[in-house]
Amino acid sequence: MKRICNFSIFSYLLICFVLIITFSCDTTKLLPILTTTTCTDITQNTATSGGEISSDGGSDVKLRGVCWSLSPNPTILKNKTVDAAGTGKFTSSLTGLIADTTYYVRAYAINNSGTAYGIQVTFKTIKSILPKLTTTIASDITETSATSGGNITFNGGSAVTARGVCWSINPIPTVLNDKSSDGEGSGAFISNITNLLTGKTYYLRAYATNKVGTEYGNQITLQTSKIPNFPVSLELNLTTTYPNFRNSYNHYLTFTKPITVTDRIGFGGILVYTGFDGEYYAFDMSCPYEAKSNIRIYPNDLGQAVCEGCGTVFDIGYGIGNPSSGKAKEELKRYKTTLSGDILYIYR
Image: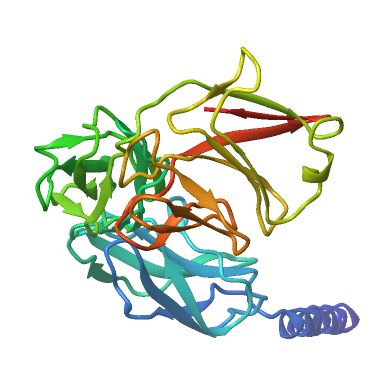
């Protein structure tokens, strides 16, 4: 009987010893402990927050960041950032926000035990303002049309729902005047301006509309050409007829009369020119100031063309034809050129 009792006591002590050893080797794993950083750098669409993880809870923090919502107690099931792993401080960038809106934010940290959240903070985004934009200088000007556009560099905090250019023969045009409609959104856009009057000065401004209202870019001016659109069709063989014109620089040919029955030489004739860059260019020889078919511009050896009437000097060295001095304010009328094999084609 005494032996049985001693055995029972021994067994009990052995079991207690094993349990003590087992539990002393086990480290309890908990959720991380963290705080949420107050939001700063608040704009209409963005903000900065973050957090600080003071304890990983006994296992490595695999992911961390902040989550946000329009409702209290946001979770990682909705909007969130992912800001690497580990403990300590971290910074998070909140994007895609709505202007003039209250948001709820909590930092989060994930370890093997699950997801823990920091205390909730709130902030309100800044109200929307008018967009910011610039107006593109007009180009491809004819007697009845031109090309312009704009660049919307900031949407004001809300979506741009309409954009384009507006124009008038009076300064400070608005969308109540003639205008183009060129889609939505920020960034650069191109506008086609049509139904203009020949030989008129126009004022242009790009515009952009968001929920706050309509804002305008800087005002520019353009003058439609006084030179009418006459047919243009000229074919030059650079191998047999004009071999010295191929691969040349600062060379020119002038055509004031058709060579063949199919030639069409515009209003005042055609000046064909190889620029300082080796490209082929073509201009109408009528001066935009004089606007007469028999008063022409003629090239010199300086990359220029000079009007025989008003004396305006035009720079043609790189194919622009812009006036550098004299009475004319408008560029020379340009025509298109295409080299295909041996043939240089000039056309409108």
